[in-house]
Length: 79
Image (cartoon, rainbow, N blue to C red; front, side):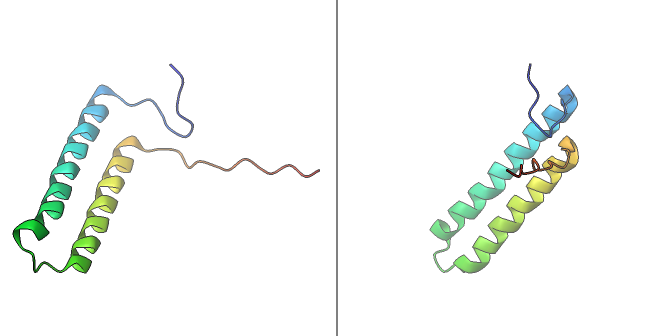
């Protein structure tokens, strides 16, 4: 099976943890999406900030588990 550039092969436990993180993230984002429906006076700017911060936090947790390599750009060729 080909490897994705910059990523290592994950163990079954790591895959399981990452799948749980994806479920938890989806649950939090659903709460954010539903909040203005149940409380129309919700401040949408702060809700957007919350969404961004939650997405950033979950991305950081996934990267902590997957530990991807730093992807280095290809050097440009001079003609």
